Length: 395
Image (cartoon, rainbow, N blue to C red):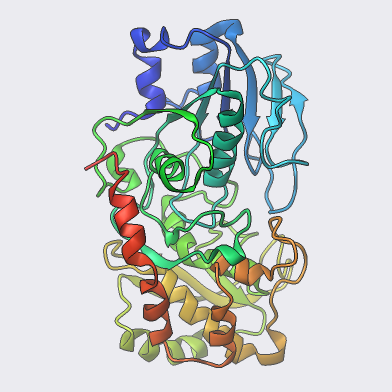
């Protein structure tokens, strides 16, 4: 079994003694040890009254908030009797007041390996805030559930930076949380943080989550399965559109659709296109489904469940970019992009924020050639790979 940073800390008494001051913890519901004990319970046992504050990311400390842009409040935990500060509230970064009297801040968050997932940005905001107060930040590292070998998607253009894309990363970045922290410190941070990594034991870059033998706890309400993390690399695109990404079903982010889509007819159209692009490792299963909440709630949608059959060959980003282009052209005037506020991106178009570039919308709307995807995916990639290779922890 892989041992996470949390497991290592909890089982090494000499290591525990190296943290002599007041402690805080940034965590969520998936912050558990290999026996499913929550990190807060474990660290409370270790540090007792010196554990004085807890921080929670998007979806809340207890990970019960379904949707984007729904903030959570600060409160005192009724059982642990310590303050819980939300970093998805009126602020996305800890204030200097929140950080008062903290000497060590532990971060234990289960990420999903995709640029458009906000936990890595909560982490880098914490690194920046703690640098200003010289607080030691300790990353308790965890596996990347989609593995740390394959890289997919374009690299973010910083003109479209937001809370779903702060840094120049590809969509599937192939890093653990600790490696993102190291890259931030080496290449993006203006002021360096007092950073410490407690890396995993027995972890290999080629591992998918099941290979680690660790228990899966959903890191956010709409990722109940590891398979959903693989499809999320691509289906997250549809958050910026009127296309349902399966929220309100039991397989969110594995299912996509719309009330006007006729799934069997569309599959017949799509199969030769996807075959020509050499896309494999999956099956699009035509289906109709009824979302119980969010987009098209109560209306039957036609679409597809993406069944991943070979993770080595599956390219979620390219598949879903092509699906999005086909949906745009199929639905015509019935297709629209999300136009209400999205993830604190100011006046940016939500689709451009998710894609990290505005060229995709033009490509969809002009029904452009699919070679565009290979071209944009290669841009700045050599530089990214060079930076990435300089900070890797695991061979």
